Length: 358
Image (tube, rainbow, N blue to C red; front, side, top):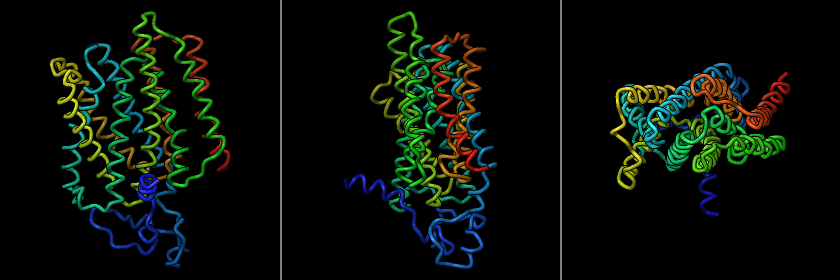
């Protein structure tokens, strides 16, 4: 119980820090004056903790940033699948390690230029906990999806990965007290039926079929963790943590994992396969990681976690097209039925939100 209480405490928002009379934050925290409270709150310094912000209301900007994020992830996932097809010896650990090497120097230099403090030990305990969880959850989710994509088609894999908003709505309701409905819970359960249908089109080779199941499980776990990640990013934004802190420490965590893998299981990293073509793929993935991480963090400043996460669905358009055009995958009836179930589970909450806002 004590560990659960500590985790919940890490998500608590200081009433003073988010009100109209903010406390004096240390220089690693960010208070956006444009995101101040409404007129009533400005005139009443004792306003409640729930506030309406200018930034929070600008959903269009957040949506555009999330579309940019999904485009970057699409390029990265398709590039990784192309690299697996070209060099079967390449592993998911190869494809994730490059992201850390791209993120750390870029965001360190950018943070120094902007005068942002990146000293982990100077943060308060709540921020330290959020950073630690963000690194752990984000890097684990990333490794799982890239390892899983080695064994399943990129289109079906990312479609399963798109279930993360359903998981996000559940975890956001628990940790951030955002509204959760019985519909979300039901759709989450129904979506697993769609995932099962996707697994029915098995490869002829028995070993490949077994590894494909492993791939589906990895991507499903990754989707669960990615949903939790959105909640953590939202909690960090509500705690006024500068947006450059998250991608920098995510890169640090990824680099640390790479070092551990090299020490414990060096056969999982294949430097000998890094020829000029694969280095170009790595370059695309590193660039996409830099842009994608920044736009994802920024998007979550413009709306609740449950509103931003569904825009990830647009990635499915790119990856399903890649399956058909680039990788010559032929979908069968069970694939189409499974995709229809998952898409329905993803679209229904979006339609409900749109009808509710009319």
